Image (cartoon, rainbow, N blue to C red; front, side, top):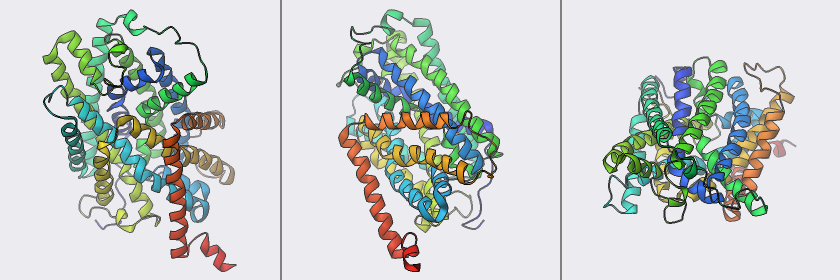
Length: 454
């Protein structure tokens, strides 16, 4: 196999759904429930998950149509490049996406490694926070090792890790159902349902945590070159994984807050406590809680595995297109996967483990929303308008209403973000635009190539 041989299409619906769900379920509510409850100060913070689900379902239809029509690895990069014009504005949007992804992709991976560090606490109580964070970063290196192999082997590992994640969720749900106390679960503060400007901002914060928990419903789109019958498999995997995870999250969230009073963990000093371990210790004692913590860590490794698998294909796709450093387009000569991209993305993610969880979540969303999520909604509209003859195995239901709903939701999440992090996201994009112009000027490509011909 030479360095530019096409990857083999090995992922079917089972593996695709497992990939998405492993990404979504891995860290999820196990690490974010304390932070979620702090946003609005009580169980009504779960409204954030509802808002996030609406946005994710609408946006899932965007991903489904684009992924079914443009059946290539790279996901958003490919959609932006094709939607806005390969050699003009699409080239600019594709570059900006890769530029922000070099920050936002590893930050998302790092949140799971932070989760690993949190859940090592009951297993390794004598260790310091820094030591556990180092262990979390080491998991990042382990995931690189697990992914350094052929795609058919990865499909089997994905399903195995997914099964462990489902088992962990099932134990939490069944335990919660058996010991559920409605008085604990629905212990609302007096002003819970009084909404003012501050509450709408707080709801936005809760929804950002919710959307973080759902991120990954599109992971299969990033390995489109490796999916069997992508026109059928990709839309089904996206929507099926969203529906299943929404039900699982609702059950898990209620199970946890129906056993552990939210006031015990919704505080600044307890926000990093392993809340599921607290739940199991209350019911079954410390020994079982520690055993279950191992299963939670398995689930988080599954999340990291699925995420890095998809995200490592993004710089690879851009490099193969000539829009990023050529070295990222190399495929392993014997095992047929983009090994350079895998290693670089994985190492940056491991290094980002030492940033606080809340900062990671808000920073990755503030840098990603404008170009990736809002940008590819525009790409969908452009393709519908300029290329109506394009083959579309899946078409968005009720177009364009879901696209408009998704866009409104993303803008709400963006403009309720902390202003300093919003500024960081804006600065990242402005810097990316300046780098693009300099690079284009040096290489005499658009828009400077067009100026020279005039």
